[in-house]
Image 1 (cartoon, helix red, strand yellow):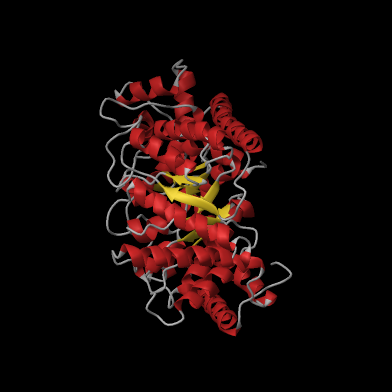
Image 2 (cartoon, rainbow, N blue to C red):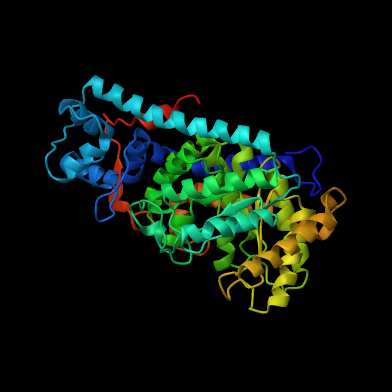
Length: 516
């Protein structure tokens, strides 16, 4: 905590909240440490160098892992059997091995010689070394081009479905003032248990997250960074059934931020909770190595639950996300914890309530670049009212010192934004940031805002005590967050989870669990 709390938060209450969050999260971490998933194993092989897809578009890494699991199971990990076969059969290339395995000409064994383990470790370390080189490359480019002069960073979404249309739109947005470009994924990609291959032009309400799309957009924004004289960051989504793989690809292609919430896939995509928690720990370990800032998804709770009644569930989720992130090796500067301006504007004192919630998050996580989300739930299609609401949202972000401000669109819930819509929205943000500047230094909340923040923090502590007594998985199953009930024994992807056997071997996990 900072020494001067505008909200006059009680240090002991804050410490209690963190202690309770750790107690609630620790059993889930233990669960993640004792299980693996097909996506964790595929991500490991991707780091080891496997690439490409079969003629039907199914990645070779999927074909290889599926064959290994069919022959020897998942619980021992796939790296041992794969590299054992690679050495035994004299293969030099993982992709060629995958092709032969898919044709039924490779037999895998759990009897893994030490030489195979060493070979697997070398291959995966090579991939992680590349991730770390890309991190150093980012540091050099930031030093060369500079960071945005103002905070919060202006974060704008671009996604047409066609990566070759996304690129000029993203570059135009950066020239118009955007500091972070987010390419949202095609509808339903989070439920695909494979990562599409190559550059794509056929997404729906978003563009497919692929390694080639990452590479193309990063290269384009590097050109624009040089042009505008500041490093423009790139964001995508490490969530869904392929969360670990997308995290690995993001690290390899130097993305800067990734949507990576611990519970979003459970609540809003009905992905099995155990699958999600195992996958998210691995993905966050990769993000930690890559120097990637994660963005969490608490704003989504307030699109399904009431933003006043459920405000404390956002605080609880932020505290849990912080615990899970720290345990995986992420530092405070990498925690783009989410919250949102989603209180019904018809409610009296709604703006003061928004300030209370935003300032509470700012003071609970003083060193985190919080991600402040614009109004969506109560946008009616009246573009003039919407632009006004977005202006109030921008002002709240300035008053409470947010770190990452997602640009609100006056046409939210009406149409996919046109370039002209984005330009008007960016004008709104730029005006408020320029006119208000460092107004947060002069802002001193009154009793109403302080009392509301204390109430939310107190309710969060009470809820954390309840979660601690019943267990986080049970709490999720009972609809604690976002009013979604997601039992631990159900959901998509459960068949891709296995308990680790005594001889489990995964070189990526061994490296990532070790010192950085």
